[in-house]
Image (tube, rainbow, N blue to C red; front, side, top):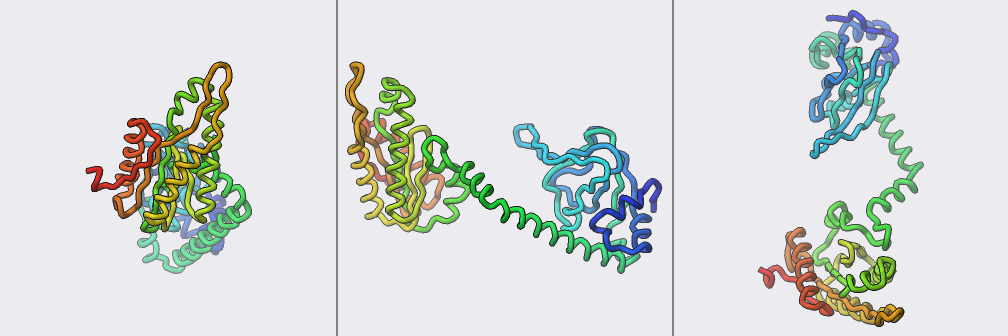
Length: 330
């Protein structure tokens, strides 16, 4: 085995080798190799099995993920003395990112010269057993460290979660929450009630965007109150002025009653006062409601069908409540 250029001092600092005695370290050194990686050359690719890991002795390695649009998200950079890929190697996992040399780099690899842990185990089972025990301890420490970090920063985790899913203008949940979380916890039957304020463009064009923003905040309060009174559910903003609620374990009678209540709440909203020659603006709304999975068991078509029913009612002049049912729409 080629061990020329292998720095034993660096290998002794690697977590996987931390408890090995001198004879075992000598065995590791003899079964390690060196690697010269020119700038721009890949060290490993996403999806590749981690059959070895690396210690960077000189240069710089960047780890990145490639996006479908051709762009890249850089995840980390490693410099001389850093260990690369040991956790994936210990788990026998596939890399979830790629790594390449950001500049000409020199690395130690283990196992080297095409060796595998299986072949090393046949030669020196005691040493390989010690390495595997270190791997288990390393994974346990790192998992506990991550868990501790999350617990210590739980309020930040919750805040980041909230910001990712919350519409900043209204405080309603964004539509992305449906795909990411809600559909996984829906229980049959669940009600989807969509609302679109009528003549909203007239309000914005005549009174400005601030008037439209204020109206959406007032509508959001109505939706949140309905969810609060129901005791469960989500109030969401689907698009610019299309909003609604999803209620778990909600039957047809209750859903229809809530749709009617929302309609009355909109009609009862305080109008925008007349001023500067502009007439008073009174609020009305178009509402569409449906039941999953009764009206359509396939969530995507159920959602799109309800939205289409909403828009059809709105284009017909609005100020109405419509019911979506797949059989009726086909």
